Image 1 (cartoon, rainbow, N blue to C red):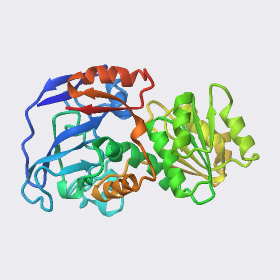
Image 2 (cartoon, helix red, strand yellow; image 1 turned 45 degrees about the vertical axis):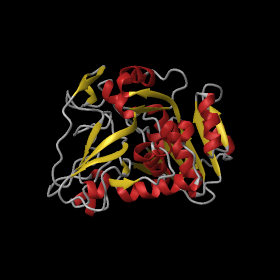
Image 3 (cartoon, rainbow, N blue to C red; image 1 turned 90 degrees about the vertical axis):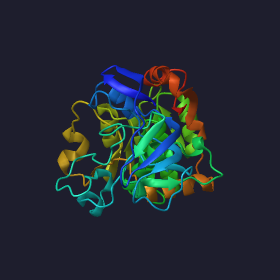
Image 4 (tube, rainbow, N blue to C red; image 1 turned 180 degrees about the vertical axis):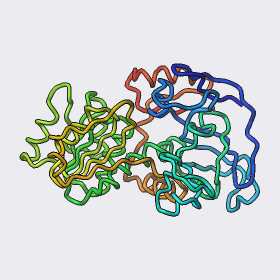
Length: 354
């Protein structure tokens, strides 16, 4: 089969690999649509280490090609999605309600981001086939009336963005700011709206993205290239600050900006993947006395999470189709990486089809 393989920092190439053999508890899924994530770009740039030869990607939409021993309740040819995070449902982390940090069957220790396996510790989804571990816990059927592109955001981008609002404990009537309106930030905006926030502020430097953020639920948009977002947000909130600040980019500047507009007792919900050193200036947290909460989140996975996200898509309350701005064949994935990594031509998400 064809697969996008990490060679070394700066190089992901299309290569040939054997179709995976299916073991007990596993399922082989034939990919019909997948995409490239910002985390994949971190891998490409060498900012997040993975082993050479690994197939990259963690957002699968496809059909079941083969089922391993013990995998029941599914049929060959059935359309499914699988979360970017594939918890086993039986380890200490899963049973402690931290399934994103899944350590696998029978393991005694915990490993940060252990639940993220596709394109991290096992072969991923930018290929013609992917082997799904712990299939019963992770395969979720797709309703017939939903297209691949309608559900393409569910495995990661939608789940991550929504969790920014969920873990930030957004309440009815809250004022929320989301720094960065890339795909995850746009989903965080939509999630804040669904959670009941009544004043949602979106910050970005690209007007086209800010226009989409209004469609996702933003009430106020700020282009940081035109206005100082910290000054504007404090003016909008009469100097009080926001209830929840969501960081959706993964830089020191946006992280610190979230702290500077956060009210005493507020929540900073961090979704970004950071590289390098991250610091907390003492004045942004009132020398540690401001009763603020900083929470980080790894995309929730598992079939129950996917079922709920599919329900949201099917309800029509959120339309994420505008996030798919480009389409490439798997044969052209190197060109797709070049476009996405360099953020050309207004790209948000790319649908990759074998």
